[in-house]
Length: 338
Image 1 (cartoon, rainbow, N blue to C red):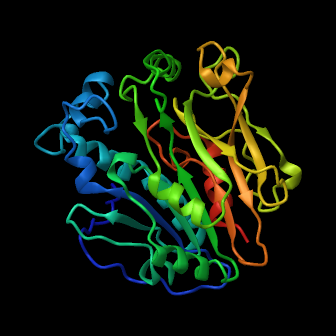
Image 2 (cartoon, helix red, strand yellow; image 1 turned 90 degrees about the vertical axis):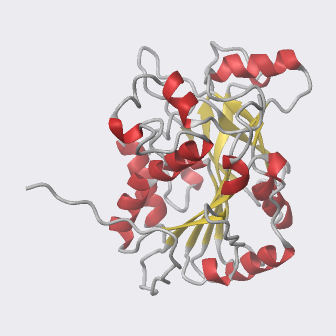
C-alpha cells in the first residue's frame, strides 16, 4: 500500500506555531521579489536566474519526464524559482521531524504580490530565522529600519538564532577577462558571467554590525580520486553550538561565496570552517594565494543580544546538487541547537 504525501496548500495566512520547551521553530525567509525575478527578460545576458527551459537543456535528459513538462511545470524563470522551493523539502522534513514543528517558509514579495517585511508576524513564533539571500543586486531589496529594529529586539530573546546566507557575487569586476576566468572556474553553464546576489542580506549585516562580506563564487575541491566534495577544514574546538558534530562535509555547489571578514576582531566573529577550493581551475582568489574559503561563521551572544548569529550558504539546505548523510547531520544539529 503506497503512502500518500500530504495535500499541499498555497496562498494562505501563516498559522503561528505554539512554543514548546526545547523544540526550535525554524523559518525560511527568501529575500527576493518573486515577481521581479520571474519577470526578468530571458534575453538579458546577466544578473538573472535561468529559465526552466535552459535548465532542461543544460541538464538534459534529467528533466525530460512528464512532471517537468509545460503541461505540469512552469518553463520560465518562475519554474527555476520553484525548483529552489522544492529543493528545501528534504530539509523541512528532517528538521520538522527533529523539532516537532513545521518549517515556515516566507518570501519578501511572493507569487501573488504580497510583500512581507521581517516583523513580528515572522518573528513571534520563530526561534531560528534563516535569511536566504538570493535577491539579485539589481532588484534593490534593502532591509528597512523597522525590520532591523524588529530583528534587534527579537535577538534579545534567549535562544534565538539568526542564520544569514548571502549567496555568491560572480563577475563583480569590470574586467571581462576576469569574469570569463570566474565562469570557467565554477563551470556552471546556467550561471551567467555576472550574477550578483545579496543586497538585502548585506544591508542587514551592515545594520547589525556583522563584519562579513560575501564575495566570489568558488568551486569546492573534490576528494582525490572521487566525485565527493573534499572534507572541511573545521575548527571544532570553538564550535560551541555543535553545528559540526558528525559533519565532515557540507554540500557540493559549483559557486559558493567566500565570507570575507571585514574585521580583525576574532572575538566578535568565530570562523568555524573553511572549504578547500578546486585548484585545477584558475581563479583570481586562488591566484592571490588562497587555497580555501570561509564557509561557516558564528557570532556568539554579546551585551546587545542573547541570540546567536550564524553565516552559511543557503545551498547547504537544498538538494538541487545532491545530499549526503553529513548534510542531514548538519540540518539536525541546527534544528536541535540548544
